[in-house]
Length: 189
Image (cartoon, rainbow, N blue to C red; front, top):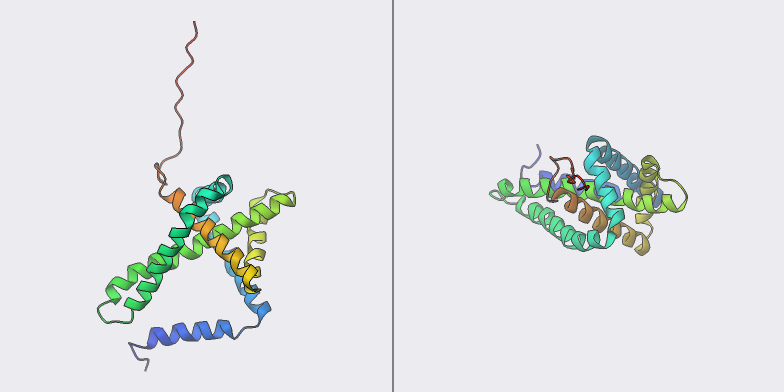
């Protein structure tokens, strides 16, 4: 019988232990696969939102980075606080929404950040097709396991994706309205 208090902690530790037990090439393959799957799901299931997030990160990367730095810190704090609260009996009620928000948005926005960085690299190579961006972004995410330079690329993708995703999500019009621009007719004499 699994201990109800230590059961989730043991499961988490076994997942982390099995990931750390992989060699470098296997970890890179896991990163590539997860990024390609998450990027494809985000762009396929939310086509307007996903493409607008990637487009906005391309148009204004500095603003997306400035929004993304506190966004990554906030989502990481939500995830960590939820994990700490989940270890107590009463805290589980409060931990579920914190972990749900952090564990949903942070990986999805990071994957879109990798797609955006993949778009930068792919456009330098002469292609502007979104599926190629996803694959190149997956290759960049596989580079994360290499060392400090890879960690910097992963951090940049995370900050860029979270910033652009938050900017699109909390835009003035939101996700429900199409962008319409009403231009009055020209006054002709």
